[in-house]
Amino acid sequence: MTDGPLLAAHNLVVRYRDVEAVRDVSFAVHRGEVVGLIGPDAAGKTSTLRVLGGLLRATGGHAEALGVDCWLARRASTAASATSPSASRSTATSRSTRTSSSSL
Image 1 (tube, one colour):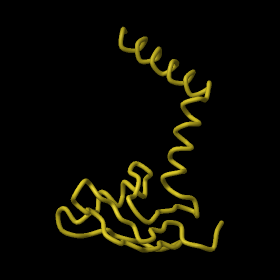
Image 2 (image 1 turned 180 degrees about the vertical axis):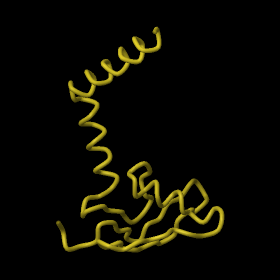
Image 3 (image 1 turned 60 degrees about the vertical axis):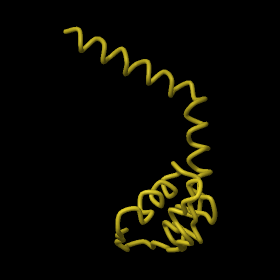
């Protein structure tokens, strides 16, 4: 386990066209800490969480989980699952299971 933060944002910026949803947000969450993300509507909470989950690329700064960039980790895992033969096999199996059980 790393001695650094489990989750961190460094000078995070998210822009949607002319609107800056997140401006220069930085924080670190260490093992054992409990954190809440609170603020008024349209304060950038959801955008920040989307960046941390790798669902949205930050316009500026970066976010990392366990020392790995959130955006790059999400892209790598998505690419790996898309090319994995076992992933497509398990999807086909779950579809046939659903079809069989729904026809009962």
